[in-house]
Amino acid sequence: MLSHLLLCLCPSLQLVSDDPQPVALEPLQLTFGLYQTDKATEMYRKFMPMLEAVQEGAGRRMNRDVEVELRIFRSYEEGIAALATGKVDFVRFGPASYVLAKQRNKNVQLIAMEQKKGKTRFNGLIVARKDSGIESLADLKGKRFAFGDQNSTIGRYLAQEQLVNAGLFARKLSGYEYLDRHDKVARAVQLGDFDAGSIKESTFKKMNEDGSLVVIQSFDNVTKPWIAREGLGADVGAALTQTLISLDDADALAAFGVDCFVPSSDEQYNFVRSGMQVALRFDSSEATVAVRGSGGR
Image 1 (cartoon, rainbow, N blue to C red):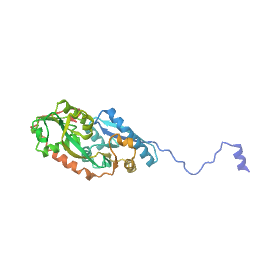
Image 2: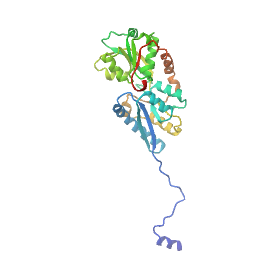
Image 3: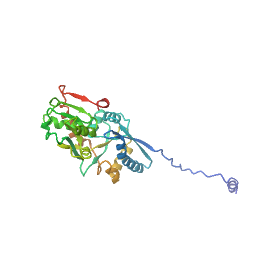
Image 4: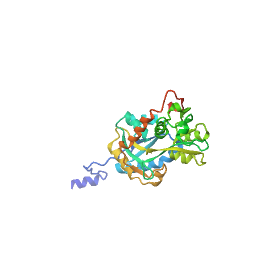
């Protein structure tokens, strides 16, 4: 009777359950890094649909909101350093950049790798002007060559491997430069500033609508890995891997030309490591070298 009276006189009094109430988790903030390979506006346009899909998928798997911030590094070196020192959570890099980051920090981890047209290999190209008379690597002796970034897989390392294997060392060229980006290399060759250059296949297709360029050598490259920094939580890494591998957002995938993502292993990049070692033989103090861009990128 007394307890009934108290409840009637104090209608605002509420019984408290002994069961703790769930506490809402703060959104997980992640940073995703790219180095600049194209105009920044174009890169934002291409990658935002993908990052929105990653946010949604990873958040669903971890049962919490995920927010991903896109960071575009001005150079390959800046991006590699950020990953190796843990200043960015996960990245999309070229194979050579992964190898270099792994050398600096053995604990960076592969999340997944891209697949294109059902394969995890695609072509790098060495190109020349169609009207130049250059038809093979042998014709490049005494010519000027445009490379991309000094840490680029196609733009430098695997292209230089091709030149070395053909007996074309730096001293046998009249000169070469690093122009940072594939589009800049293609344009420089088109304008006649250089006799030949190394670019990725997608750049060739995009910038050769007038048919002014011709391929004189193609070579294999591994598709791009997505990589997590040391110390990123195992649950976060697993959620990112599962999200990428199960991703079926056709628009997000098509934006940068991949079919899907597949599991990756360090061994898949061994042939790039071998190519990088061969490329080290290309340079010589006898060659004429000019480096442009921020910090010799």
